[in-house]
Amino acid sequence: MKSIDIASIDLNLLVAFEALFEEQSVTAAAQRLHLGQPAMSASLSRLRQLFDDELFIRVGREMKPTTKALEIVPGISLALRQIRQTLEASQTFDPVRSQRVMAIGSSDYTSSILLPKLLDRCRDAPGIDFRLVNYEKDEIEDLLEQRVIDVAIGTFQSLPRQAYQLPLMQERFVGICRKGHPAWHNGISLDTFVSVSHALFTLRQDAIGEIDKALTQHQLQRRIALTTPYLLVLPSIIAASDLVAAIPSRLAHQFAQQGLVELFELPIPTEPWLISMIWSKLVEQDQANRWLRQEIEHCCRGL
Image 1 (tube, rainbow, N blue to C red):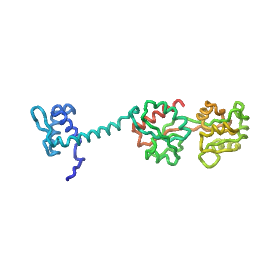
Image 2 (image 1 turned 90 degrees about the vertical axis):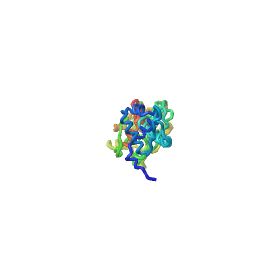
Image 3 (image 1 turned 180 degrees about the vertical axis):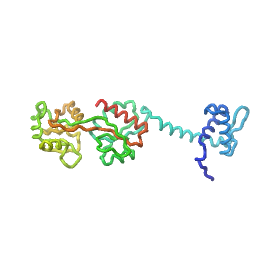
Image 4 (image 1 turned 135 degrees about the horizontal axis):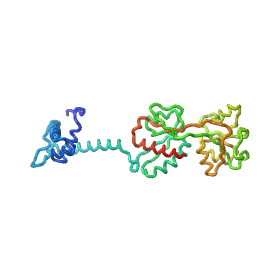
């Protein structure tokens, strides 16, 4: 069978064929497609040449389809329907009806802060499922480009290539200790702070955090009695011991509101840091991804 070079075919002819088949009138088909009657007649002439068949023959006042036209109409109708569905899907996103899965690269800290608000805000999108994905900083570029995740939330020293970034909120360290801690008297002094034992959240194998770097500038050192890669275990550890810890302020306020710990300002200044959302340029115009970004940005305004 001789192959057809589809690049040489005006696909608008298929739309004209569909209109002629359904209207059975050159005039009505022309009006439906907002064309002049001569233009529609020209399209019919080209269709006849393409399919080597009359396709439509005047019978009375109507243009009746030939056997050939009846044979090809199912395939043409299906092809046009699929093209329209594809175009509509790329241009419209309805969160109320969507069944999409949204993957968010996020730590346990950012997840605990963001997800309660995001899930509450997305009650009107019941078919959307969320997936939280932990990530290493050196793999974030691949996760975004391969679309394993839709967005990533965190602190990024350098932006992955082909990615956009949106600042969400600024964060800082505050201290926590158990209620009734002997060192706590409406706060903790610097001397007391360095004399008590500390717990440190870290993903590295060392026992050095940002607080230690700040203390070093003042020729001070603290004792790290415990390190953990699990930030959310700290409240129960702190509540049941005389350890203290420095953690992100929003998380500390959550723990304090739950009555688990006392909160205090650190007696030594530390630099705040920025929490951002990043996403690949590949999904910049994707309406579902844009919707997710807008929802996350809105949730962070009140944090």
